[in-house]
Length: 140
Image 1 (cartoon, rainbow, N blue to C red):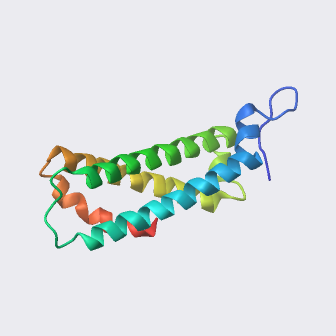
Image 2: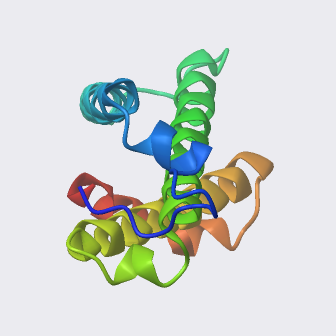
Image 3: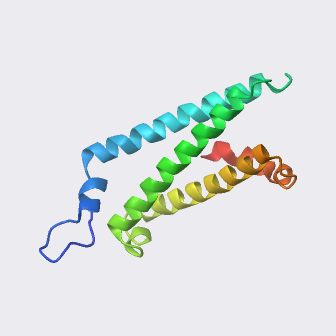
């Protein structure tokens, strides 16, 4: 791995030591795996309940909404931490730049999706127009 900046003593910063540690890489891999399972579960639930009346208690949609926000925050803070560790410019100009740009795109798209879902939960009329973005979610 290429680590760009070091502090004055020539050692890595604590962000770099954290982000490039095997434990953090395991955390990232598990986060991606859990998110994939979650998206599959949510898609299966949506497909199996498409012709059924809405749940009276709203537990399932609320659970999926909260879990989606938790995953968004986890990926967002992961992205920010890695960006801080590598530096603003170096983050998108290193050997992993394509993965980093993809991560920026995915997290940005997820932000739009969370905002749309929040507007729908709040009953906004504008959110109905934005629901078409959720179709693209499977790209994640």
